[in-house]
Length: 210
Image (cartoon, rainbow, N blue to C red; front, side, top):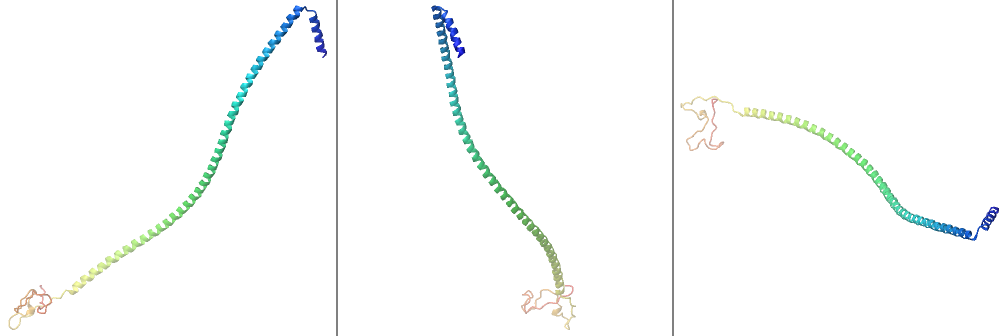
């Protein structure tokens, strides 16, 4: 306050020493400066308003972008939840398939082992059958040889022994028993060409030469 009072007193002393024209000139100068300051202030306010409008527009655009980003974020979050559920389902399914694979592999191993055991048994049975077949074949060959030998012996024993030729009878003629083997005619209408083993046919006696 003391400084303001001192300034007013100095201004009054300066104005008191000026003429009327000088006061009018200084007043107009002050008014012009004041008007220029007001114009400058208006321009500054307009610039500030323009910047404020630009900032508001940027804020609205940023809000719109933020809304879109939030919507995309929600969609991505929902997608992540869905993918996580699918991942858990796939993990559980893979676990089930893994257990099934282990079980199936164990079953297949057991079946293969059983098949191998059966195959080994069948191979042993095949070897025994082959051995039995070989023994049977040898036995059949031996039986065939025995049968052939028995047939030869039977044929040799069934062959009749040769008898000596009888001497001529008193009449000088030969007897019927001394006839050689072959067809004969008895003169009574019968022939040796009849059926073998007929009552009217006599068995000829064969000489050793026959």
